[in-house]
Length: 323
Ligand code: SAM
Ligand code: SF4
Image (tube, rainbow, N blue to C red; front, side, top):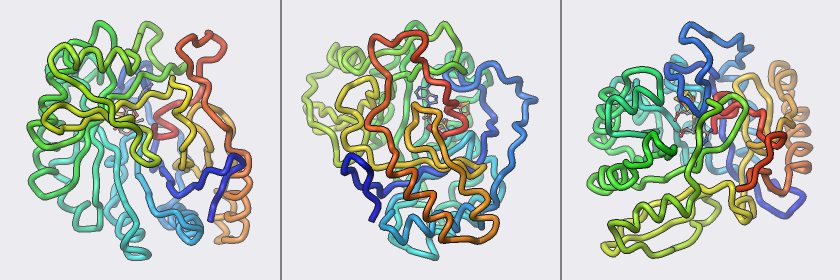
């Protein structure tokens, strides 16, 4: 079992399979030209899987595949199948921008994928284009419909930004509610790679928007999920992911593995250790040692704060850690 220095049990690995992306979201990598291809020293699926097995043998039961855009990595279904064949009760999920889902969802499900989080920041084509810097909405909506049709469990992720999509909070909630899908609004996390002019909404501001139309009841945090849940009168639940709140990190149960083999104990900080050499040599013992060391040194909490100073802005790139 993996327990960190603050007594938190780590049972969740988020694995980023590439830094590449077919979007250029304002809050993630707005300044990279579309022609930019990161010089990634990617680990193979076999190498990533060797590390995941070490985690699974130590009690990890939840794995989320992310990126960059994970669906850009060919054969992703093969990776999912490897995990599923090793232990079929692992909760395998993907976080995706949804653009390529229409063509890939069925293959991913057949390989053992259970759940998908799909990012959807706007229902207006022009606003979606402004955020992703590409005309994306049609494909994303098609991807959501296809995933639901074939029976995948879907959640929607949405980042409200002042003056851009903050007038769509209720529309996005109603779009999700109509489809029986949970929406989670994520507070914009300041980072040096994002568009400098962005301003996010704090959780309480997002809930206030919903309260303009609905009676909203607080439910609470669901297990180790980062989302704080709220409920409408008809029982529909939505979530707020609020890393600027002080209690956010108390039940953190996760570590992140990048496509190049760095294990990152906290989304905010730069600290990381590499398992690349270990897995390339097939050295399970060495990979296991690095994993234990990272978990021993996992920070107690992030430093996002409502009164964030300029020098405290995180240098970690979301397209590298996978969010
Ligand atoms: N490309 C995929 C996607 O967009 O869903 C997966 C990777 S993306 C880095 C994972 C999640 O992080 C997305 O839901 C995205 O909206 C969120 N994200 C990226 N940058 C963020 C930021 N600065 N603040 C809050 N959420 C962010
Ligand atoms: Fe790509 Fe996701 Fe980053 Fe947007 S948030 S640029 S879709 S990795």
